[in-house]
Amino acid sequence: MVNNTSVFQMSPVMATYSRFPITLVKGKGSYIWDDQGNQFLDFTSGIATCNLGHVPEAVKEKLEKQLQNLWHCSNLYEIPNQQELAALLVENSCGDQVFFCNSGAEANEAAIKLARRYANNVKGSGSSEVVTFQQSFHGRTLATLSATGQEKIQQGFYPLMPGFRYLPFNDIDGLDELITIKPAAVLLELVQGEGGVIPANPKWVEKLAQICKDNEILLMVDEIQTGIGRTGTLFAYEQYAIEPDVISIAKGLGSGFPIGAIIAKEEAAKGFEPGTHGSTFGGNPLATAAGQATITYILESNLIDHVKEVSAYLDLQLQSLKEKYPFIKEIRGKGLLKGVVVETEALKIVKKALKNNLLILTAGQNVVRILPPLTVTNEEINEFKVKLDKTFQSIEKGE
Ligand SMILES: *Cc1c(COP(=O)(O)O)cnc(C)c1O
Image (cartoon, rainbow, N blue to C red; front, side):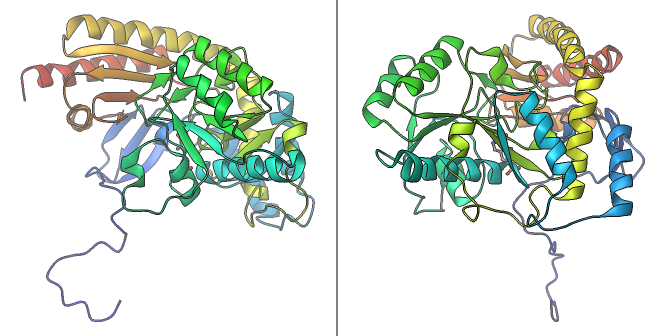
């Protein structure tokens, strides 16, 4: 920047986010601290990313060890951590092979590319379209925002990428249109996260999976927010009677270290051959060290059982608040992905909670989204309830 004579202090960072007025500098477990030394209870987990809490020991140790040896090498060579993490993901899902990338959007990009190439080069006939659902969120790249069923995400970025169609979410009769479209794939969230914490109806999902099976349509689930133990199983699809052909994951996979992946069944994975897709950083030794340590910790510590226990406790606390405040319409979600549907503006509640040293999120206009780390304790949930109760009290008083 040369000779800035502006009287305004312009941030050197582009304004893609409207940020809350705190600067976070340190984290441990369920807590995070700002640069003034104030402590906050963090029930956002970096948006479902720090699933083991902040700076988890097991991942830190593995990363520190990897830092001593090798940071990066190209995917033109074998990477042991990548092999190990892929094996862990395959052993613990219905999939057979993994492709690594660096983010959620990139994982969905890979899923969309795989679906198109499978349709064009393996099946060799039929549509290469991908069907997604209204209110969905699949990412911010051009292909994934085109896949996203929300106009506010697409606004101003026209022309969208062709090849996507949107059907109504949870609409059983609406699924019949799939038989006419016969797309290459469907892509769905089993709990719509950004769209308002809306769980998919099991009957609807079962019919969807059956139509996919009968019509050779790939069933692809976006588990970027719901995966890695968040909903009370390692992947949310395990709570439905389905076996997806492709699973996209990211957020919680690296405990905060950037990593994304798709896990595909053997048949779908035939869509990619050497040279058809790639990523410089995808699955690099550091990222896959974080992923390997994260998944290993979840499995070895029986963290999934812990999630089932604490999420039931969290449910009870949220229900008791619902009985107290008439402006709370509904509590919904799965496991530790919870939405509190309110009659007032959700953002107002989130801002008020911040004043009570509690970090929570919105999911659209009228839903408060709650995403504690999977390691959260009942004591921390008690503390959360006190802080949220105080927040709701001032909302009720119109403060
Ligand atoms: C966050 C998210 C994405 C995008 O992930 P990025 O890492 O931000 O690209 C995609 N799908 C879902 C369901 C998400 O929650």
